[in-house]
Amino acid sequence: MIFGAFVAFLISGVIGGYKVAIIISSIIIILVVISIFRQLRTKIIINGNGLLINDGKKEFNYNLNEVYISSEQRNNDSFFLYLYTEDGNKEMFDLSSLGKRKYNELIEDLGVVGVKSKTIKLNDVNKNN
Image (cartoon, rainbow, N blue to C red; front, side, top):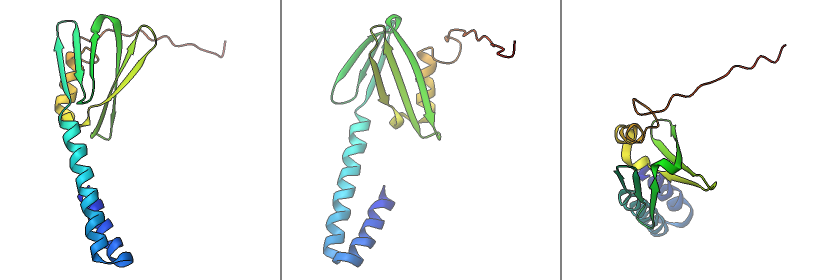
């Protein structure tokens, strides 16, 4: 993020002068700080069969017995939790601000992986017969 502000500063300095560069870099830094604070406000609480996710704007309450959960990790720095309700609704939560260790603890506590996870039976279908 800081690298982006630095590049914007250099490009703007060449094109429009250093006053423009300082203004554009300041805007980028402010947007980055706002984004970081929004992600830090995310709270996740597991209470028995209840799951509460507050993303800073909206609060989501789920009964863990009534949702299906999946997880996605990209490049060990982007973490996404997907919740599917029985009525077909899907919610995606970007939990990258938790970091790898805490995110992995969360998905283990939710039963997505680890000891609490359910066994999945896979069948191999041979199409050559």
